[in-house]
Image 1: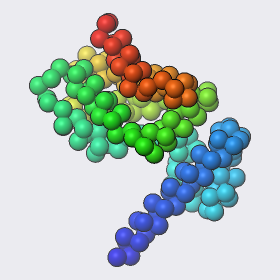
Image 2 (image 1 turned 90 degrees about the vertical axis):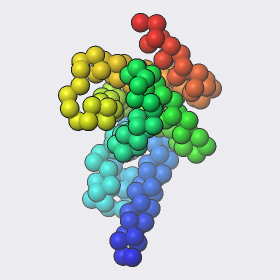
Image 3 (image 1 turned 30 degrees about the horizontal axis):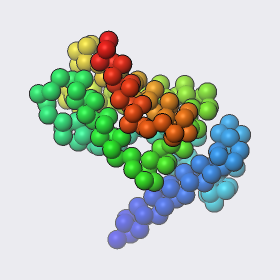
Image 4 (image 1 turned 120 degrees about the vertical axis):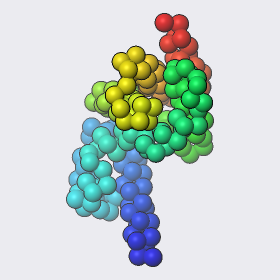
Length: 188
């Protein structure tokens, strides 16, 4: 019972820090909000901030949940070509971005698109996510180099689609820009 309470309290604090950060970033810009100001506005210490997020960048660029990636890959037929499996998972990710999750994703990706440092970090995020895909697909064994190319190319297309969507302030359909990016890969 006490662990449940602690877990709920942790989740509540985690979300409050995130919500406060996003509000401050919208008001002042990402680079102009030091962690000390963010923590104070969220009603936590700087040490508590770091207990929840390794850095300010990680607050925005959290990788997807490894178990979720593994489950999504398992839900796509294993007999499909690798590119089709990855495209299927990326489409499922997009399908999961509905309502408040979509609004939050747009706000985060607008911040990423507008902040050079975060745009650069998006490439790290992309590589980490690609590695999750490869680990799940290859059961942790080193995969064939062609598999690495296929997965990383698709994750790059996904990132570019999210950036394009964010730069349009959500005016462009996320599904449309994603299909354009994936179509470009199929034409290679």
